[in-house]
Image 1 (cartoon, helix red, strand yellow):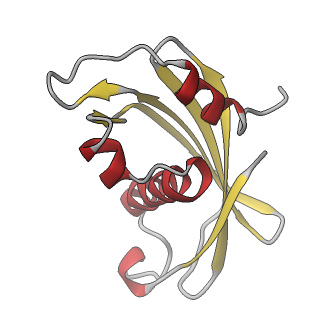
Image 2 (cartoon, rainbow, N blue to C red; image 1 turned 45 degrees about the horizontal axis):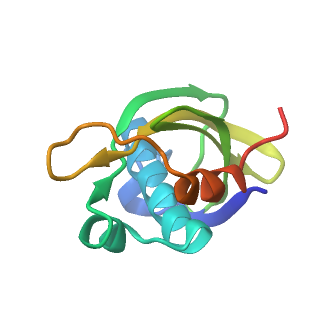
Image 3 (cartoon, rainbow, N blue to C red; image 1 turned 60 degrees about the vertical axis):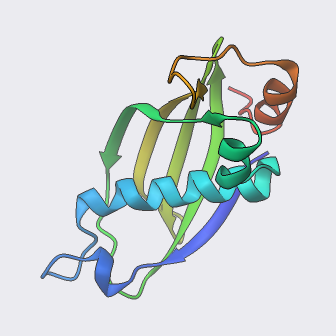
Length: 137
């Protein structure tokens, strides 16, 4: 299953040339991950922290930029789980305009306790939620 959300490129995302300024992609990726947790996994970040005492910091981020995105364009963010570790989940998020991939990001999130910020082994509850979005490859 793919988690997909559309986002409009706004003025705040752009540099003076009217294209998305590359650091803004990190913010947009974080928004998509937060949306995925709330809408796709059914556990929003507020609930993740207050009820489960967990957080999911990004420990690795790699982006490939293939085409610019411009002010006013609609981008589709397509998230899939690439790999599950003991306490980590690797994601691939493609940012697409029409059928053209503008950016491909690979992120590694680690499930950590907010009490001591140590990695927490993923139990069956979390593993089953993440597996639902795992890519076939």
